[in-house]
Every structure is written in C-alpha cells, then in structure tokens.
Amino acid sequence: MGLKLEQAQSIVTAALAYARAQGLKPMGFVVLDERGALRAAAVEDGTSLARWKVAWGKANGALSMGVSSRKLHEMAVERPHFVAALGSVFDAGLVPVPGGVLIRDAAGAVIGAAGASGDTSDNDEAALLAAIGEAGLGS
Amino acid sequence: MGLKLEQAQSIVTAALAYARAQGLKPMGFVVLDERGALRAAAVEDGTSLARWKVAWGKANGALSMGVSSRKLHEMAVERPHFVAALGSVFDAGLVPVPGGVLIRDAAGAVIGAAGASGDTSDNDEAALLAAIGEAGLGS
Amino acid sequence: MGLKLEQAQSIVTAALAYARAQGLKPMGFVVLDERGALRAAAVEDGTSLARWKVAWGKANGALSMGVSSRKLHEMAVERPHFVAALGSVFDAGLVPVPGGVLIRDAAGAVIGAAGASGDTSDNDEAALLAAIGEAGLGS
Amino acid sequence: MGLKLEQAQSIVTAALAYARAQGLKPMGFVVLDERGALRAAAVEDGTSLARWKVAWGKANGALSMGVSSRKLHEMAVERPHFVAALGSVFDAGLVPVPGGVLIRDAAGAVIGAAGASGDTSDNDEAALLAAIGEAGLGS
View 1 (cartoon, one colour):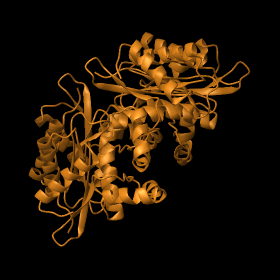
View 2 (spheres, helix red, strand yellow):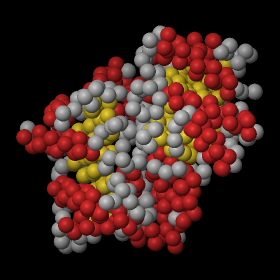
View 3 (cartoon, chains in turn green, blue, red, orange):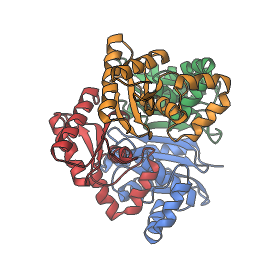
View 4 (spheres, chains in turn cyan, brown, purple, orange):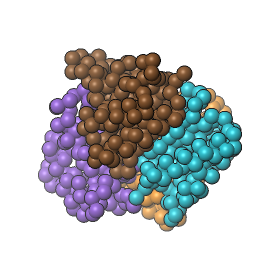
C-alpha cells in the first residue's frame, strides 16, 4: 500500500502553513515513502544551500533506523561513535537532531518519514507533527 | 533573484496535471534552483524505486552543463566517454536523455532546472515544457 | 504488505536447487524487497570476489527501473549512454544483462526483485524464474 | 579453505532460531566470508529500511580490523577520531557496537564475519555467538 502522493503533498502543505503561521525561519520539508524514495518536497525562499539535505538526513535517519531523529539525538549523546557510524553507512545520511519523524498509517505501520529543517530543531519537529496529524496520519 | 518556491510549485502542479490529462505513466518531477538545491517535487503512486533519481539526474545534468538533457543526449551519442565522465564528476549525476530542462526568467537567465521521468523521454520533456510555459517562465 | 522473509528464503532455496540440478557454475543469489533492502542471499563456494555484487546490481537495476535486467539490456544496446548513466545514479548500481527479475504478488504488484550471477545470463535468469514460480510468486 | 555456504547458512538459521526463541525484536543477519564477500543473509519482516546495513557494517568492521565490533566499540570510546576515520575508509563501512563477530575455523583462522542488528547490541551479539557455536565454529 504505502504512502500516497496526495498524503505526502498534504503533509508538505500543512507544514508550510504551520511554518508561516508560527513565523518560523525559512524552512525545507521533505517527505519520503517507506522505500526511502522522494515523494514530495517544498523548500522555501531564503534557505541556505543545503537546507534540504539537512531535512532529508533527518527523514532518512528516522526511516533507516525506525525511530524519530529525536531518538537518534538521544542515542548520539549516549554513543556518539555509533550514530556517527550509522551516518556513514546510510547512502542518504543521518542527521541526529529532532525534525525527522516517521509517518504511520491507521494500523500503525511505517509508511514513510518526513524531515524538516530551518528553525530550531524543536520547531522543525513541531511543524511536522502538526502536519502529519492534520493529514490524518500518525507518527 | 532566483527561483521562487511558488514558481517551483507551479511547475510541479502543472506537470502533474499535464501527465494525467495526457494519460502518461506514473511520473516523477523534481525542480532544482540555480544552486542545484531541491525546491519542489512530486513523485506519483506506482513509480519504481529510483524513478525520482532519474528525474533528478536529468535536471542536475542540465543545470550542471547549462543545456537541456536532450542536448546532453546528442553529446552522448557523439562523445559517450565525455558524457559518462561528466556523470561521474557530478555528485547528483547526469542522465543524458530528454526530460531535463533549464528554467529561465523573463530576461533569459537560468534560475533552475526541472527533471521528469516515467514515460518516454519525449513525453517526459513535453510535460516539463508545458508546465514551465504555464508558469510564465522559459526554458 | 511486501515480501516476507519466508518467501525470500523460498526463492533462494529453489534457485540453489535449480542451479545444482542443472549443473550451473557456482552461483550467487540475492533477494531484495520493494524498498531495495536485502532480505535473503546465498552465494556458493567457488564464486569470484564480487559475484554477489553482480547479482545485486541486476536485482537493483530491475527494481530501480521497474523492469527486468533483460529489458535494461535491450535499452543498453539502443541507448548505452542512458543505461550507463542510470548505473552511476543508483547507489547500489545497475547491471544490464539478464538475471535480474521483479518479484510480483498475486495482484501483480512489485514486492521486490531477485538477482543471479554465475553462469550464462540466460541461465542466471532461468534459475530465478523457476524459483519465483515455485514460490508461488510472479515476475 | 574458507567459509562454506553450508556453514554460512547454518549460522543464519541458528541465529534466526535464537532470535525467535528469545523473543528478540525483528532482526537482520549477514554473513561475510574472509574476503568480505556476502555469503548468506536473512532479514526479518518488520525490520527498518537500513537494518541490514547496520548488521553489515558491524560484520565488515570486525572483518576489516580483525577484531569483534565490541572491541571496536571500546576503541571508539578511547579514540573516536580513529574509529570514525576507519569507517570512512572502508567501502562497506564500520559500525562500532557489539553485534559483529569474527568466524574462526577449528585451527583458529579467521574465515569470515557475521553481523546482527535489531535488538540491543548485547542481544545482537549473543545471537551470533550462539549460532556460530552451534555451527561448530569459533569466534
């Protein structure tokens, strides 16, 4: 089954709306499906050169390990050498700070991951959680 | 000045509409700005695992060399070793078949590139050219 | 839903049995799920150092493009620069000769891909097709 | 002489049995021979996208340096820069936490390495040590 384009687009649209409503700094949002394939993205005007790569690295890290990038952040504090090594093993990298979250269907199955970068890590994550909830999906 | 998110999104939206109106196979569309940074993307349901990478490679090849991927295709027929080498030099690769086009502003300056993959190379390119025109931009 | 480990193992077991029954040269078999993730593999005694990579490249090419590596072989004859470029774009590569096949469920959905290398390309492919059929799946 | 396919398969089979008997989380197991070539693998249903890469990185790290990944973990705590650098030098990476072990023949010669990931690092390693012992080999 997997993530539908319509769902991926809804998450991006809602995350952008959240970012503007909250006055966040220029943001990049990326949505990957369960295969790690890109499905939807929006990267705002004024973002730095690799802002989208940071968002992607958060999403890819979450998806690759099956946990949020907030959890990867905690793991990185405990065992920095482990998380650094994971990043070098994953083709699309891993960025272990909040702002990368799993996307789950109604049954709780992982159907993808979303990544955000631009503001504080906490705000990045909050934008995604709000958007995923608005799209009727779980994290 | 550069490509605006709104413009990148318009191109993706118009390309998706074109693809459905023409009954193309499931498509992937990627829009990069003049720096090669991801700005917008939509990858349809039913696309193969790396469809988005093919679209990206077309866009990145076009942007990297300042010509359409149709021109890169012609160059690859004439001097395959040259184009193969280019691909190995560019981080995001180069896919030398039609379906990667430059995006130009009203003054003719390159402000980004778009890539498409899913149907025939000619149809991939046609979707982008229609979408870029509809967005009031040039190629 | 996706490919189950039990199914991946059945394919490998049947392919090995086919290879021995037919007296093929030492073989390597790799089974990936729809995400491109490794699920099962068996590489026989006497295989050369990178035999498994050839099998993997066939499977990954098929999965990445949504066609068999036999089809990729035909594409490579027609447009060698295109297929060479694809290989450089896919992280796990692409080997465009027969011996990489899609795995489909009863509904015809792609749930993975299998790759084989060791004997002639035709025999490599024949081993996989027999094994996938025996596992009650399609290609 | 080297690792036989039959031995590699025995290790995977026993590790899977151990994992289910102990109620471990969904696991990925990879067995490499003394050349670093893939010989056998089984990755369970429900594993995250890159679980198999973590298992591989543990096995490859162990084989590449000639010590267990538990030892690499100790080295990483003492000299993180050294172990991080090693990972960037090895094509298949290095994941320095327990769960990657050498496989030795009766004479004590290294004939390969096995990697596991899915549960705690300690449990990952325990599954492999039990399986290698059951296969009549050493670590």
